[in-house]
Length: 494
Ligand code: GLU
Image (tube, rainbow, N blue to C red):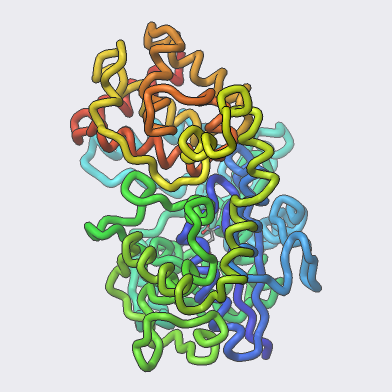
């Protein structure tokens, strides 16, 4: 049997460190045994999936050096590797489950299900789908179908008993069936949910082992039961620990940048990022801190992954990156890295139009435009609130700006400006006043070249990281955070 693993990201945002971590471990496991590694794009969520995100995920995995044998862009014998291109397959298999009594139609409307949940809660019960679709007679089902009533297909889950499975990393895990809902497999729009598509694809792509994040453990009974229902042999399943912030909370962008692009823009080397991810829950037999991907593969043993939440600490990564720079690159190679990174005509070509009218000597450039190639600018935090707007207003405007920018698909200055203008109006600020703290956050100074142009040049990840650092300087208490979330919902609904 060919050892074949995969990483199956959903293209719904920035390329996440967690995706790279899962990809790395699946990659190392497969390659150590001469196997294959697959990239599958799970884009069944039609609303949240974007081609930009898919491209960014592929670019960053490639940047790290994790190349796939089969994938949407390279093809492969079990393709296509993008779920949105496999819809007919899922429909066929959903129907097969219905025909075999393993799944059923449910015609309940959203209102009916809301009412069901309200009644359950009023009785002090945990809200849960009550199996009403199972009670329909064949005649009722046929009449509903003939009347073209919208329906979903749900999985038939036993009412009692316990599901047991053997996790490759965690041993036997038991989950009572009563904690498992009758999962929707095919949605009213004819698209599958994660569960159906994931099982159908892992089976057809002949995936032998699945290693994924521990947040998916609770979905294991549904997935493994689906294999049984189809009469297929399930791949071996193992759940890797979640990456954590230094305070042990789940790695989140509020506390640590999580987008791989950010690390690229900051000037981390891909080898060092990969090396550090390889140390998340795993170590070389001789405990050495610095190792290459090839060395990791050679020594890899999934059974040695420790499950206590590994901490992703940017300071440690910086230290390791420094070792890589000093010990592994000749001066010549380092020059090439600088050139590939930002010390090149392309970057200068973007910066020059911003500064040309303001410089008298070439050396003026560094003072004026150094922030285009720096990491986080340093400045006195008071500068952020030294402008005309009140601190409370700045806090909210900055937070809304960050959230709006997170959702922005194409990073262009006209779009960034449109968001800034709308937010300035919403906060009853002149655009100039709205931009005062943004100037500081982005450039570290109270005045500089056009800040919106600068954001376009710096890119989404670096700009947002700088804005987040600024928001951190202003400070957001838990109470304020809640208030901001509420206010943002109201703002978005307007
Ligand atoms: N699409 C899922 C994700 O975004 C895949 C989970 C799995 O590996 O089964 O992580």
